[in-house]
Length: 162
Image 1: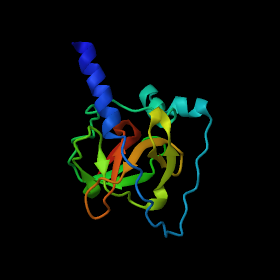
Image 2: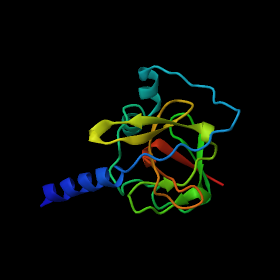
Image 3: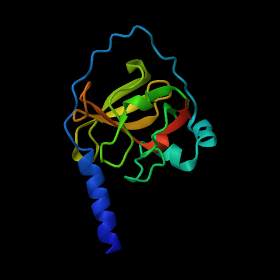
């Protein structure tokens, strides 16, 4: 029975994040983010083992396990690796997928996007634009005004209360 629950949880996790690739939004900002480049040894020394797994090895936390999932405080969600501000609490919404979800980043230049064709799916991966840390994926099934759902691993984020 335990194996069945684990299998269903894993299956739901992939299904909830295996949707069509969203249309690229206009990125008209003229500012850019200065990159942080560190060796894997440096990242391992600075991050917890789990943060390293998610941010540097493109891992995924289990659905409904993030302490940030039900956070309703006002503030800013930053990259757990480099502290770049990524999302405001005002853009967070309950998606029901099991991961913190946002409908837009603080600034489009703070997040980067790449095609992700892993696990036989085509998705859009979301990365921190400063340190290239894996954050999660973005999907075209979010609420207004953007219609986007940034499905983000809580382990990739730190929360700074207002």
